[in-house]
Length: 281
Ligand SMILES: [Zn+2]
Image (tube, rainbow, N blue to C red; front, side, top):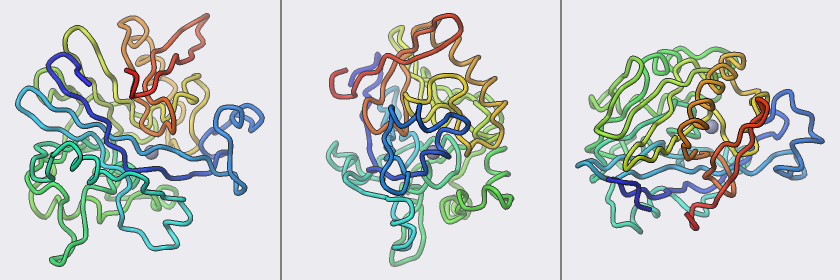
Protein backbone atom coordinates (compact mmCIF):
# COMPACT_ATOMS: atom_id res chain seq x y z
CA UNK A 1 0.00 0.00 0.00
CA UNK A 2 1.33 3.41 -1.00
CA UNK A 3 0.94 6.19 1.57
CA UNK A 4 2.54 9.34 0.17
CA UNK A 5 6.28 8.88 0.61
CA UNK A 6 5.81 5.57 2.41
CA UNK A 7 5.16 1.96 1.50
CA UNK A 8 2.96 0.29 4.15
CA UNK A 9 2.55 -3.45 4.61
CA UNK A 10 0.41 -5.37 7.05
CA UNK A 11 2.55 -7.79 9.03
CA UNK A 12 0.47 -10.32 10.95
CA UNK A 13 1.57 -12.54 13.80
CA UNK A 14 -1.63 -14.59 13.60
CA UNK A 15 -4.35 -14.44 16.23
CA UNK A 16 -4.92 -15.02 19.92
CA UNK A 17 -7.90 -15.13 22.27
CA UNK A 18 -8.86 -13.17 25.35
CA UNK A 19 -11.91 -13.25 27.59
CA UNK A 20 -14.71 -11.29 25.90
CA UNK A 21 -15.99 -9.83 29.15
CA UNK A 22 -12.56 -8.49 30.05
CA UNK A 23 -12.12 -7.12 26.53
CA UNK A 24 -15.30 -5.06 26.75
CA UNK A 25 -15.16 -3.81 30.34
CA UNK A 26 -18.51 -2.43 31.54
CA UNK A 27 -20.35 -3.27 28.30
CA UNK A 28 -22.92 -6.09 28.81
CA UNK A 29 -22.33 -9.25 26.81
CA UNK A 30 -25.65 -8.91 25.01
CA UNK A 31 -24.16 -5.90 23.20
CA UNK A 32 -20.59 -7.00 22.53
CA UNK A 33 -21.37 -10.57 21.42
CA UNK A 34 -23.16 -9.14 18.38
CA UNK A 35 -19.89 -7.56 17.27
CA UNK A 36 -17.39 -10.31 18.14
CA UNK A 37 -18.88 -13.67 18.99
CA UNK A 38 -17.23 -15.65 21.81
CA UNK A 39 -16.11 -19.30 21.77
CA UNK A 40 -17.30 -21.95 24.31
CA UNK A 41 -14.98 -20.52 26.97
CA UNK A 42 -16.18 -16.94 26.34
CA UNK A 43 -12.98 -15.92 24.57
CA UNK A 44 -12.95 -13.77 21.46
CA UNK A 45 -10.49 -14.11 18.61
CA UNK A 46 -8.22 -11.10 18.13
CA UNK A 47 -5.75 -10.13 15.44
CA UNK A 48 -2.06 -9.44 16.06
CA UNK A 49 -1.72 -6.83 13.33
CA UNK A 50 1.66 -5.11 13.03
CA UNK A 51 2.72 -2.58 10.42
CA UNK A 52 5.84 -2.32 8.27
CA UNK A 53 6.63 1.22 7.15
CA UNK A 54 9.27 1.85 4.50
CA UNK A 55 10.28 5.28 3.24
CA UNK A 56 12.35 8.39 3.95
CA UNK A 57 15.38 6.11 4.26
CA UNK A 58 13.94 3.97 7.06
CA UNK A 59 12.51 0.49 7.49
CA UNK A 60 10.27 0.54 10.55
CA UNK A 61 8.19 -2.14 12.23
CA UNK A 62 5.39 -1.03 14.56
CA UNK A 63 4.86 -3.66 17.27
CA UNK A 64 6.03 -7.26 16.91
CA UNK A 65 3.07 -9.50 17.81
CA UNK A 66 3.17 -12.11 20.55
CA UNK A 67 6.05 -14.23 19.26
CA UNK A 68 6.80 -17.81 20.26
CA UNK A 69 8.30 -17.79 23.76
CA UNK A 70 5.46 -19.57 25.54
CA UNK A 71 4.82 -22.89 27.22
CA UNK A 72 2.26 -25.19 25.62
CA UNK A 73 -0.07 -24.28 28.47
CA UNK A 74 0.27 -20.56 27.69
CA UNK A 75 -0.30 -21.21 23.98
CA UNK A 76 -3.53 -22.90 25.01
CA UNK A 77 -4.68 -20.29 27.55
CA UNK A 78 -4.22 -17.45 25.08
CA UNK A 79 -5.40 -19.47 22.07
CA UNK A 80 -2.35 -18.34 20.11
CA UNK A 81 -2.56 -19.46 16.49
CA UNK A 82 0.22 -18.56 14.10
CA UNK A 83 -1.71 -18.79 10.85
CA UNK A 84 0.75 -16.08 9.85
CA UNK A 85 3.94 -14.95 11.54
CA UNK A 86 5.98 -11.74 11.56
CA UNK A 87 8.94 -13.71 10.14
CA UNK A 88 6.96 -15.19 7.24
CA UNK A 89 5.25 -11.95 6.37
CA UNK A 90 8.56 -10.07 6.33
CA UNK A 91 10.21 -12.84 4.30
CA UNK A 92 7.38 -12.69 1.78
CA UNK A 93 8.33 -9.02 1.25
CA UNK A 94 12.02 -9.96 1.10
CA UNK A 95 12.73 -8.00 4.27
CA UNK A 96 15.34 -9.72 6.46
CA UNK A 97 15.36 -9.17 10.25
CA UNK A 98 18.70 -7.34 9.79
CA UNK A 99 17.00 -4.84 7.45
CA UNK A 100 14.76 -3.39 10.19
CA UNK A 101 16.16 -0.02 11.38
CA UNK A 102 13.57 0.77 14.02
CA UNK A 103 10.99 -1.10 16.05
CA UNK A 104 8.34 1.12 17.60
CA UNK A 105 6.56 -0.57 20.53
CA UNK A 106 3.22 0.96 21.55
CA UNK A 107 3.80 -0.59 24.98
CA UNK A 108 5.45 -3.63 26.53
CA UNK A 109 2.55 -6.07 27.03
CA UNK A 110 3.49 -9.46 25.59
CA UNK A 111 1.03 -9.29 22.71
CA UNK A 112 2.77 -6.16 21.39
CA UNK A 113 6.46 -6.91 21.97
CA UNK A 114 6.60 -10.73 22.14
CA UNK A 115 8.43 -10.75 18.81
CA UNK A 116 11.09 -8.28 20.04
CA UNK A 117 13.38 -11.12 21.05
CA UNK A 118 13.94 -14.68 19.98
CA UNK A 119 15.49 -17.83 21.46
CA UNK A 120 18.58 -19.01 19.61
CA UNK A 121 21.48 -21.37 20.33
CA UNK A 122 23.28 -18.37 21.94
CA UNK A 123 20.30 -17.70 24.17
CA UNK A 124 17.76 -14.91 24.03
CA UNK A 125 18.68 -12.21 21.50
CA UNK A 126 17.00 -9.26 19.77
CA UNK A 127 15.03 -10.52 16.76
CA UNK A 128 16.14 -7.51 14.74
CA UNK A 129 19.92 -7.24 15.28
CA UNK A 130 20.39 -3.78 13.73
CA UNK A 131 17.25 -2.16 15.04
CA UNK A 132 16.80 0.51 17.66
CA UNK A 133 13.70 -0.38 19.67
CA UNK A 134 11.69 2.61 20.80
CA UNK A 135 9.30 2.85 23.75
CA UNK A 136 8.22 5.55 26.22
CA UNK A 137 10.40 5.77 29.34
CA UNK A 138 7.28 5.68 31.51
CA UNK A 139 6.27 2.36 29.94
CA UNK A 140 9.73 0.87 30.46
CA UNK A 141 9.74 1.90 34.11
CA UNK A 142 6.26 0.53 34.76
CA UNK A 143 7.07 -2.71 32.92
CA UNK A 144 10.25 -3.06 34.99
CA UNK A 145 8.27 -2.69 38.24
CA UNK A 146 4.99 -4.48 37.54
CA UNK A 147 2.22 -4.71 40.10
CA UNK A 148 0.27 -7.79 41.11
CA UNK A 149 -2.41 -6.72 38.61
CA UNK A 150 -0.32 -6.35 35.43
CA UNK A 151 2.53 -8.78 36.12
CA UNK A 152 1.17 -11.46 33.76
CA UNK A 153 1.34 -9.07 30.79
CA UNK A 154 4.90 -7.83 31.33
CA UNK A 155 7.53 -10.44 30.43
CA UNK A 156 11.03 -9.02 30.83
CA UNK A 157 12.47 -11.53 28.33
CA UNK A 158 10.93 -9.22 25.70
CA UNK A 159 13.18 -6.27 26.55
CA UNK A 160 16.15 -7.31 28.77
CA UNK A 161 18.19 -8.51 25.73
CA UNK A 162 17.58 -5.09 24.11
CA UNK A 163 18.84 -3.28 27.21
CA UNK A 164 21.89 -5.57 27.40
CA UNK A 165 22.87 -4.76 23.80
CA UNK A 166 22.11 -1.04 23.98
CA UNK A 167 19.29 -1.36 21.47
CA UNK A 168 16.51 0.20 23.57
CA UNK A 169 15.77 3.92 23.24
CA UNK A 170 13.44 5.55 25.76
CA UNK A 171 11.26 8.48 24.74
CA UNK A 172 9.83 11.22 26.92
CA UNK A 173 6.63 12.35 25.27
CA UNK A 174 6.05 13.25 21.61
CA UNK A 175 8.90 12.27 19.33
CA UNK A 176 9.46 12.64 15.60
CA UNK A 177 11.09 9.46 14.29
CA UNK A 178 11.66 10.87 10.80
CA UNK A 179 9.75 13.22 8.55
CA UNK A 180 6.14 11.99 8.55
CA UNK A 181 6.37 9.56 11.48
CA UNK A 182 5.66 10.57 15.05
CA UNK A 183 5.28 8.69 18.35
CA UNK A 184 2.51 10.24 20.44
CA UNK A 185 1.74 9.35 24.08
CA UNK A 186 -1.82 8.01 24.39
CA UNK A 187 -2.11 7.08 28.08
CA UNK A 188 -4.87 4.99 29.65
CA UNK A 189 -4.34 1.34 28.73
CA UNK A 190 -1.01 1.90 30.45
CA UNK A 191 0.43 5.22 31.59
CA UNK A 192 3.29 4.99 29.08
CA UNK A 193 1.27 3.77 26.09
CA UNK A 194 2.00 5.46 22.76
CA UNK A 195 0.44 5.52 19.30
CA UNK A 196 2.12 6.20 15.97
CA UNK A 197 1.04 8.84 13.47
CA UNK A 198 2.10 8.45 9.85
CA UNK A 199 1.52 11.54 7.72
CA UNK A 200 2.35 11.89 4.06
CA UNK A 201 0.79 13.29 0.92
CA UNK A 202 -1.87 15.07 2.99
CA UNK A 203 -3.16 11.82 4.54
CA UNK A 204 -2.83 10.55 8.09
CA UNK A 205 -2.76 6.94 9.26
CA UNK A 206 -3.00 6.53 13.03
CA UNK A 207 -1.78 3.29 14.59
CA UNK A 208 -3.90 3.22 17.75
CA UNK A 209 -2.36 0.29 19.62
CA UNK A 210 -4.53 -0.56 22.61
CA UNK A 211 -6.10 2.90 22.84
CA UNK A 212 -8.87 1.26 20.80
CA UNK A 213 -7.99 -2.36 19.98
CA UNK A 214 -10.73 -3.23 17.44
CA UNK A 215 -13.31 -1.30 15.45
CA UNK A 216 -15.95 -2.72 17.83
CA UNK A 217 -14.30 -0.75 20.64
CA UNK A 218 -14.78 2.65 18.98
CA UNK A 219 -17.76 3.86 21.12
CA UNK A 220 -16.24 5.95 23.92
CA UNK A 221 -17.31 3.78 26.92
CA UNK A 222 -16.27 0.49 25.23
CA UNK A 223 -13.01 0.36 27.16
CA UNK A 224 -11.18 -2.84 28.10
CA UNK A 225 -10.98 -4.06 31.71
CA UNK A 226 -7.29 -4.53 30.97
CA UNK A 227 -6.87 -0.75 30.89
CA UNK A 228 -5.10 0.34 34.07
CA UNK A 229 -6.46 3.90 33.87
CA UNK A 230 -9.84 3.69 32.10
CA UNK A 231 -10.82 7.28 32.93
CA UNK A 232 -7.58 8.40 31.26
CA UNK A 233 -8.33 6.19 28.24
CA UNK A 234 -11.64 8.03 27.89
CA UNK A 235 -9.97 11.46 27.96
CA UNK A 236 -7.24 10.37 25.52
CA UNK A 237 -9.83 8.91 23.15
CA UNK A 238 -11.86 12.13 23.15
CA UNK A 239 -8.82 14.13 22.12
CA UNK A 240 -7.64 11.63 19.48
CA UNK A 241 -11.14 11.07 18.08
CA UNK A 242 -11.74 14.82 17.77
CA UNK A 243 -8.59 15.20 15.67
CA UNK A 244 -9.32 12.02 13.70
CA UNK A 245 -12.76 13.29 12.65
CA UNK A 246 -11.63 16.87 11.94
CA UNK A 247 -8.63 15.79 9.87
CA UNK A 248 -10.15 12.65 8.31
CA UNK A 249 -7.57 10.23 9.68
CA UNK A 250 -7.54 6.56 8.77
CA UNK A 251 -7.26 4.40 11.89
CA UNK A 252 -5.38 1.11 12.20
CA UNK A 253 -6.94 -1.36 14.68
CA UNK A 254 -4.14 -3.60 15.92
CA UNK A 255 -6.34 -6.36 17.40
CA UNK A 256 -9.18 -6.35 14.90
CA UNK A 257 -9.71 -9.89 13.58
CA UNK A 258 -11.39 -8.58 10.41
CA UNK A 259 -11.47 -5.14 8.83
CA UNK A 260 -8.57 -3.42 10.51
CA UNK A 261 -8.79 0.01 8.93
CA UNK A 262 -11.47 2.56 9.67
CA UNK A 263 -12.59 6.15 9.58
CA UNK A 264 -14.55 7.69 12.41
CA UNK A 265 -18.06 9.06 12.06
CA UNK A 266 -19.34 11.34 14.83
CA UNK A 267 -22.99 12.05 15.53
CA UNK A 268 -24.17 13.92 18.66
CA UNK A 269 -20.96 13.06 20.50
CA UNK A 270 -21.21 9.34 19.67
CA UNK A 271 -18.63 7.66 17.50
CA UNK A 272 -18.67 4.70 15.19
CA UNK A 273 -16.20 3.44 12.61
CA UNK A 274 -16.71 2.91 8.93
CA UNK A 275 -14.32 0.03 8.36
CA UNK A 276 -12.47 -1.39 5.40
CA UNK A 277 -10.31 -4.46 4.97
CA UNK A 278 -6.61 -3.99 4.34
CA UNK A 279 -6.80 -5.74 0.97
CA UNK A 280 -9.30 -3.45 -0.72
CA UNK A 281 -7.68 -0.28 0.39
ZN1 LIG B 1 -2.95 -5.65 23.28
